[in-house]
Image 1 (cartoon, rainbow over the protein chains, first blue to last red):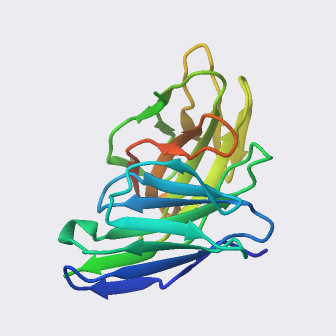
Image 2: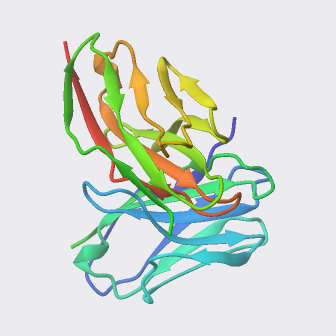
Length: 113
Length: 112
């Protein structure tokens, strides 16, 4: 079965650079979530989208923005990168109409040097 | 607000030992509860879930029962294997479509 696809899997950037992470949800899933997991930490919710509209906002820094496109894929844009942004970034998708779990992608490991 | 508290690790066990990882939650209404597992260098995989009180989720020998009276969802396995070594996260979702809230994670290390 198709799963959540994230790209790239690994990314190395320098401080103050920008990065764009992509997420392709499971087909027909209408909701996308972004999480950030620092080393040894639990995943922290950043932002979510339902039907291309922002549906919820968590601890997303102002330097980050995200959107969901007409094909339901989502992109997380990160600017003015800081060393502390180094983390594993997960995308998850689900169907808002069904009280089911969210399915997670493999994550993008971002390293800021 | 909603929150999840799980026992801190690491938990170190010998193969075939009994496993319990405690998880309690705070939430309004009737949340859905989940256990996710993360193997080294991997993403989060759903291990099991329960969507209403007294439901028992089970998968791969792991079980957890949704206890509303004690607001708990403890993970158990009767006989762990080396391959079960991973980080386990308890999580809840308050309402359909809202984001998952995770506990801090518990690292399990099983030795042969």
